[in-house]
Image 1: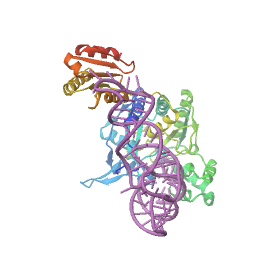
Image 2 (image 1 turned 90 degrees about the vertical axis):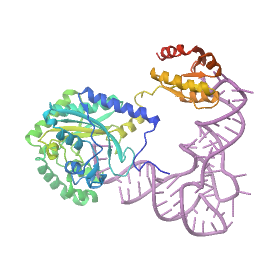
Image 3 (image 1 turned 120 degrees about the horizontal axis):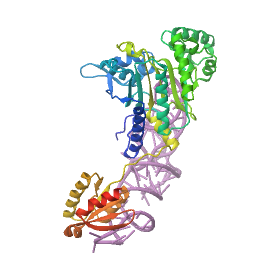
Image 4 (image 1 turned 180 degrees about the horizontal axis):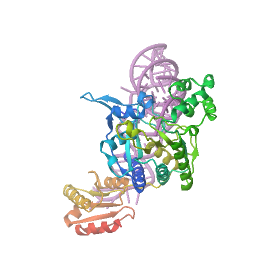
Length: 418
RNA sequence: GUGGGCGUGGUCGAGGGGUUAAGACGCCAGGUUGUGGCCCUGGAGAUCGAGGGUUCAAUUCCCUCCGCUCACCCCA
């Protein structure tokens, strides 16, 4: 028997209201901040990701779905959204539009890793990008948008964690200092972290290894190595957050897994959870547009995992999700009445009603069918109604029914709908 | 890639080395030859994840594989 590929899932009809609610709620939040939706292709030239995300990252190293098409082009299913949005920004000359450009997306991403709770190979992400302004007020804006959109969704007890990792020019001196601090501890580090000391010492800071965590506590802080511009940016952002009344925790161990981040980085997590908890993460990426071949352009954005949001929403039983209204069922007995039911169904649908035709079984069974769908109304046409040119409209909740002419049916239903 | 847990009808789930593998939900039909929900009766639906081994006998014990799941690595 065929199954959905590992790490993918079907969103069944019963779950659809939930997903649609999340999509529209998030979209509305973004729109209320003046963001516009952008859709980019599901796959891109592989280099778009290679050059932006960073060759040393795991995403590039082992998690991309990369393939050649029949023309020999190197393509990859997108592992994240920011690089593709920047590619579109450059390609369509958005630097000539009014800046900053405010964009959001709701789209599937693909990563080849082992699935576990809240982590899939095809994952749905919602994200925003604000491109073309270095003002810390823009940092505040996207962070505020992140917090408020998650809260509007119904997620509670959110924790905002924030840090600044400085500009590209600040980083070498910080990394140097960090290495210098860590090297004496080399023997006490786990194997993975020993390797990281060479490849990417920043990542030791958010290692899950207990020894590493302890050592990291006293490590040099990236915020102490900021250049004057980045330092000023960082300090004004903190002031702005205070001003906006947004609670945050500075976490000097917060670093990002992607190479393109600069200055501000942040995560949002539900308070009460551990390892798999981050539902939103982002930061500034002032060098990315240039890296991809555009003019130097500051930008900031974040992405949130919709799968994890839904997981958390289900846990918190938050938010009333609007359900689609059940259909009116057409029930009948006999061939001519059936034909007439089909015609009347069309009539009702044209008048904006939702209508289904009961399967051709006993009337009793057709009513069971209607009840199991949750139909409030059943339009019954038997031989008697057919010859009299009437219909019987049954109110399933009330348990009563009235006979009426065809002309009376539509007004009766429209009235009932209100 | 590594480690733990699990795999019995559509779903949940009991069982246990011995010719017909419980039960519940759901589905279909009938009880009411033109009327749902409750109730009653009946029915369909399972090569007990796959392959191999032990045994007179395996769904049950053993091994391998596959799948699901959780965690690690890593990560929005």
